Image 1 (cartoon, rainbow, N blue to C red):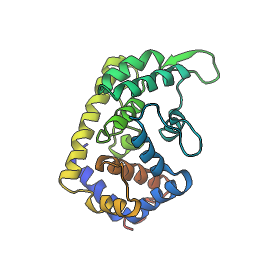
Image 2 (image 1 turned 180 degrees about the vertical axis):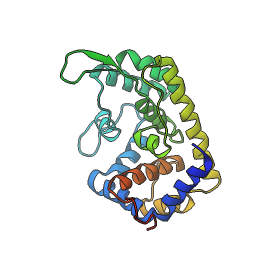
Image 3 (image 1 turned 135 degrees about the horizontal axis):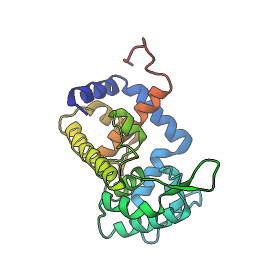
Image 4 (image 1 turned 45 degrees about the vertical axis):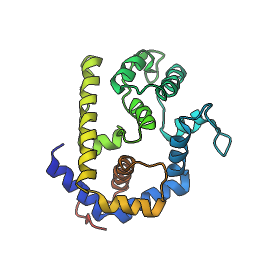
Length: 229
């Protein structure tokens, strides 16, 4: 999480912004990802939640877009209750994680036995929907910043505290990116290309990081290859 390393990575995004934005173009063409995000942000505070153009419920579009998987129906039911309640009172991410913990279970592979899990990404997405300046935590962000989650052997409270500490870093780091214009050109080109109406600059940074990792996973930065567009 050192600034010089992060600055280097932002420069790689900047140098390859055309290729990275093409990843997002593909997501919009195939999945309507950016359009669905705009609709979700626009709809989250409506009462009742509206139906999407294809007839899908708000919860259905939300679950698909944010990939709410690996949890049971009880978790999802309580999760959406918290999302709706958050429209009236801003939630704390640590409290959401703690409150959802009893419902965060999944079956062991090949067994009926359930194990306790800790969900942090989903609560971060909930908080982001209510405040689009709030950074999202997911595996791509984790990989980009070379973050290692707290060991699973630790008590849940310590793990939550560690994740919240990293998220506090994300808040400060995204503010630094925007204040120092470290991704100025990619952000401006994103806006020119997609003409977003419901995107915060923090969300655009999130898209760029997400697309960068997807681009890397496609083999764009193989050893010996150039990092320029």
